[in-house]
Image 1 (tube, protein in one colour):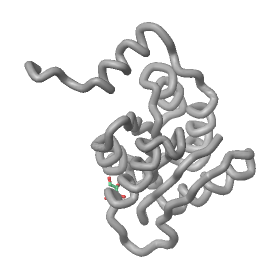
Image 2 (image 1 turned 90 degrees about the vertical axis):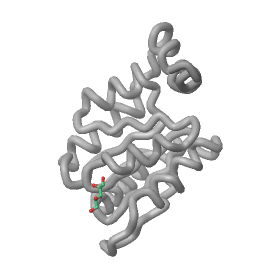
Image 3 (image 1 turned 90 degrees about the horizontal axis):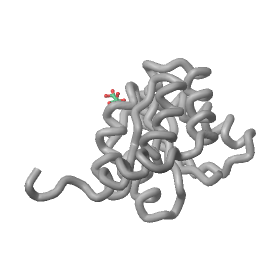
Image 4 (image 1 turned 45 degrees about the vertical axis):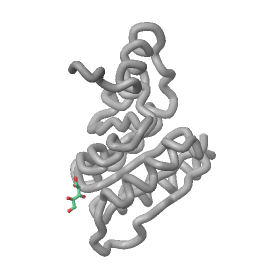
Length: 148
Ligand code: RB5
């Protein structure tokens, strides 16, 4: 699977671990940084990665910041992005099955490495749910009507 990944300084250690493990597992990972512990602004990295997914250059992306919250908020501003902030393996499974999440946001300071790695694997392996899930996801992608 081809993936893009990005982090800020709060998520760089977990991001580097995920890059290594994903590579070992045979995935093709484009690492957009950050590299190192210097303080950076997470929206810059979220937007860069999310735009690649939005443009169809890569099907899926992973974002890591201290909590995963800021990255997910920023990524979801980008057209066609359904970024799920997950803290558990179960949430990662449901993000794929119910929400067809094309990006996953994780917290480097809030989720331990093994849980994060398992969550990523489960998210990648879980098929998108059909029927009622697709209907709801299509509504998200269409956005709210003017009257709402
Ligand atoms: C950076 O200190 C921190 O705010 C960031 O990594 C993230 O947790 C934001 O949501």
